[in-house]
Amino acid sequence: MSHSLVSVYLPLLLWPGLGLVLSQVLPSDFPRLLGRLLYWVGIPLEIFALAHGTDFSQNTGLAPLFTVVAVVLGLGLGLLTLWGIRWAEQARAVLVGDDGVEQTLVWADKARQGSFVLGAMIGNTGFVGLAVVPALVSGPYLGWAVFYSVTQNLVGTYGLGVLVASYFGRGLHTQSRWQQLQDVLTVPSLWAFGLGYLSHRWVLAGWVELSLGRSVGVVIALALMLMGMRFSQIQGWQSLRLAIAPTLIKILVLPALVGMVALAARLPLDACQVLVLMAGMPSAFAGLILAEEYELDRELASSNIALSSLALLVTIPLWLALFAGLALTPGLGA
Image (cartoon, rainbow, N blue to C red):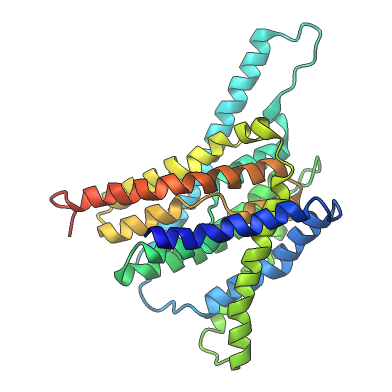
């Protein structure tokens, strides 16, 4: 297990580090251009390759349903926590008074609110999840990890995630419901998934299949480099402090709730473990890409990713130890 984790986290150190270095010499608008390139080309290509290479007729189980449950729970927890933080901030401002000095409400910014909700809601199930989980579980439930990742991209990241980004984003320009629906329907990754699903039975040329497989590695590297470039904008503890709440939701509260729901539904223990691990993946790089596209708080998005990625080193052994204990519990273990 330790060898698998090292192989996963080595790229998480290498590529963001390179992006951090390149951010010092590249033009200031390069990260946004790279983010848009990933949004319109890179991520759709990765999702097409994943959907094209997955057999959706086997081992689907209840993974898509529980993925939707996890996404909705993450959205609800993010909105509820954000409401509580904003209420406490406003109450404190009233109690303290301005004394002639204008009060600064940190969470009044809609772009920051959008990054907060996305950080609590969508996880890195594609780049990190599909690299970590198959090394930690075995048997027929490996397919659950793939279906979880695809469903989250379809329903969460580029479904509800786009609605959230569209609602909170684009500066001060309020989006109509029609504009938000249009944003969802024109998301390139949704069309890429549909084409990949329909082309599953197509026999592509060998060089095409090889190129698709290699393109995923390129997309992952570019996404990690973009993360490193945005890390350079983190302003010390102040930026990281704002990311604590969405990180705790994403990395601890959400997977714990998903696990309790799965256990209450009497799913097999191995299936519960897959769902908990996937639900507990760090905040998604796609949140940063959406922040680039919809003008959300990029600094908070980067801080969410940084904190939750570091926390993953602690939470994975925690979940594995918890399920090892559950396996010894009469009525739960095999």
